[in-house]
Amino acid sequence: HYCNIYLTTYRFHRQSHISSGKDEADFYDDIEIIVRELLYRLNDESATVLKANQLALTALTKHVPSEELVKHIDYVRNLIASMVSDARRRKGGVGDGEFLMPGFNIPKGLEPLLPIYQRGILYGNASTREASAAGLGELISLTSTKFLAGPLVIKMTGPLLRIVGDRNASEVKIAIIQTLGLILTKGGPSLRAFVPQFQTTFVKALSDPSRRVRVEAIKALALLMPISTRLDPLIKELVSGSLGKSSQSSTETAGAVAVQTATLEALSIVLKHGGSKAKLPESIPSALSAGKELMVHDDEGVRESGAKVVGAACGLLGVDVTLEFVDENILSGKDSSERRHGRAHCIYRILASPVGAELGSDIHNKLLELVKTYMSDENRLARQGACVAVGAVLGSAPDASACLAAAEPIILKAMDLQQPMEIHQALAAGLSTAVRLKPDVLAGKEGLALMDASLKLAMSGVQRVQWSFNDFLWLALKVEAGEDGLEEYLSIANFDNCKAMKTLFSKVLSRQKAMTTIEDF
Image (cartoon, rainbow, N blue to C red):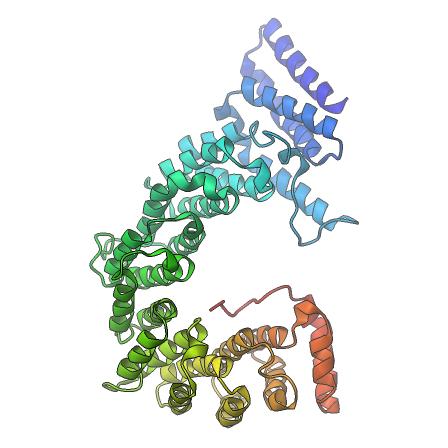
């Protein structure tokens, strides 16, 4: 049996070296050969082979010090990546679907390899820590939740949380936070005891000098929400940080504006995924108040992130609070280009939230007229914000047909090829929002003019515009569900557009698996 042969060979080599008076280190030259052969057996179909292979790996990691094995971490990662690629691409493989490594999906399947990764995470230099943390994440992604439950996932979590706060390079922090996110995804409720440590780790990372670290921390907070129970202290801390009052925000970390933006993004994520768990009556209103204050900030990024918080808070607080906010802060008040930009994004976020479709036709019509005005604004940022907002207006409209008829002329004007690239990209994001909120809002002859104009922009000479409108058409034609959306369009479009859409569909849209440029609202 292959694995028993390798295990026997390993023991024989070790014993022969010792008996011949050679140093144990002389045997280490053979490690990569043994590791290669054992790792290859992780993808074997035989349960007997997998069990024997597990015993062989256990013997290897038991007899060879982890500080020696960790030297081969890059080699191990490359081998596993190659195996996964082969398994995906071979005939009958899973392609881009989920692939689970058979050798990891048996009881204690990951345990033999854990000491190598833990050694690298805890005691390696920067590059070894990064490789070990990222590599552990790769193993987790190849293992089903069933075989990660209980003590094993806890054993993985401890070392990562222990060293993430050290003076690590940003690449190391990114790898650690990403892997912690994977652990949260797979580990779920079994990690509830670690919630305070996770929370502290991710909130602290919001003030990191590296933007990528901050982005990963925001994503990780979203993954933490399903097992978080005490949301009020977290919301309070994020509100304080977003207003620049937190001890975490300082120019020594990432700069006040960058920290404010990241903290606002985190606050909106926490409200969206866990805000309903807040128990104190002042928690959500305090977030709305912070968003209100920062939607008129000097920095455009802070304004846009503040609008996200406004939308999330309004979605939780309900119609009456939202109507009051809209009346006092969007439909009235002082005017400036910054305020118009902030208001446009607030309209977008509010109407895209769960409360958006419940505001009634009167307030909706007022917001539509305001957005149409902003779409012709002299300020570029206000125009861009309005181009995104108009999609939320369409998608939340009580009377979609009437709203589309009223908005179509100004939308088509913004789709003119002479308009700036940024306007086109914003409009693609807006139209994508419309069909997410109301999938058939542009179906049939009513939406044909906008679909034709979108096709034209998807075939324009500006690559970023192409990508943005490919995303929109992928959604509008419901490509993921098949060709019915395409056939509906072909039944009403003219000959030239039919030909162009069929080509785009077959060469681009049908090969697209998901959105590539436009964020999920």
